[in-house]
Image 1 (cartoon, rainbow, N blue to C red):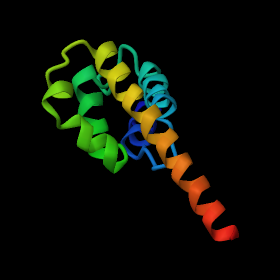
Image 2: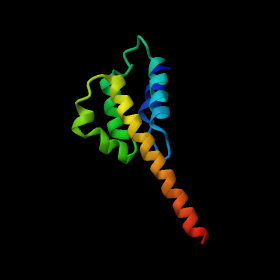
Image 3: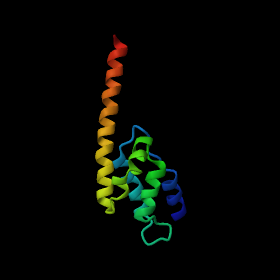
Image 4: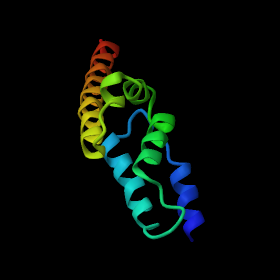
Length: 104
């Protein structure tokens, strides 16, 4: 069962419309099921997963010095989540503008 959970984590990707906080919490919940197991991901491994499989804008943020130098995992997640909330708000605003424009 551990390998099935690890595979599910490995296949997890953040889509553009997905909220970072919900996506990362899902990964953490699955990872917690591996508690005490050799397949459990470290915080550094989760960071690497985010760097590889988050949506493009979040991946770009993850390579900035500010995020790279944030050593505390909770602070790291909070900084990414704050950015992601702004990203999704802006995305929604652009979608609404496009809908308004297309209705004219």
